[in-house]
Length: 330
Image 1 (cartoon, rainbow, N blue to C red):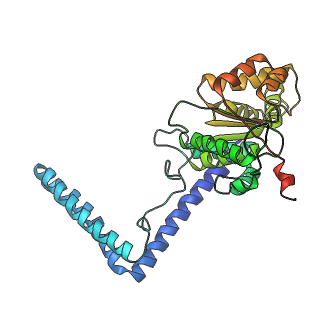
Image 2 (tube, rainbow, N blue to C red):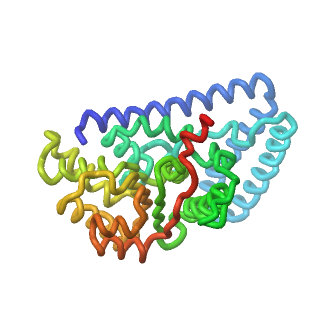
Image 3 (cartoon, rainbow, N blue to C red):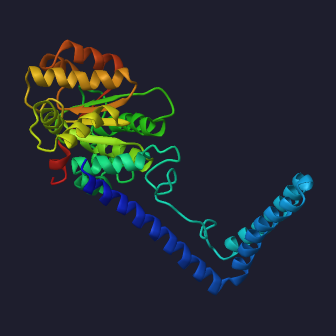
């Protein structure tokens, strides 16, 4: 990514830190005006810390006793301050500096100099121009998920209704998000006809993991093919950007491939799709794939190697029912 775009993103982080500082100052002014006793307690707590440092320097031999006494005093004053917060319906963290990212404290980098996950995601969003996805995720997420959109009428060939079946998919998808990063990598394969909720479910997963600070790349198979062609054949004049886009497909925490099987199919596509999926699986990095095709049809289009990896490494869920987009107009 070019230097100008990186500076633009870092400026955004600087603005966030400034906004946090300004917000804290405003909160302090508000509390001081309405509840001066709270600010007095705040000052007293701060003074204990300063007094501790001074006394320890003067009497290092009494350090443990001094620290213990100061800790006791701080705990008493903090408890008294919290009581005042609760009595006046004030959030307990109202006088704390809040950051959008608690990991790097909106600095973009960690103490060891590595990029924070939030910064990596900012770079990816810029590189892939994914701002439109943010608007989609505001509408399509687990919070807005509505099971009532799915028919309660049983499909005889399946033995369940679309709503009952969706419940059986919703819970594993929710568990996938809840346990992401805590256990061995899992992968999901969603298939079924158009308009049954596959993309919506992918959006739910993406939204929750982005909110948790994981680096997520969400692309259609067609766009991934474009990224591959730019990288392999130099179609993008910004080769550094093409290189970064390509690496991100392998390095991100979660890669979501939507509409697999709709892109142009040839030997190049087959080889590269397998390479991406296989490399990520070998590195224990998660994938979520959605397709209108079932796994065996995917195997016929790509290769038996792809089919084998899907059957072996993915939890497979079929989406059933009628096209929800048309159902809404009935």
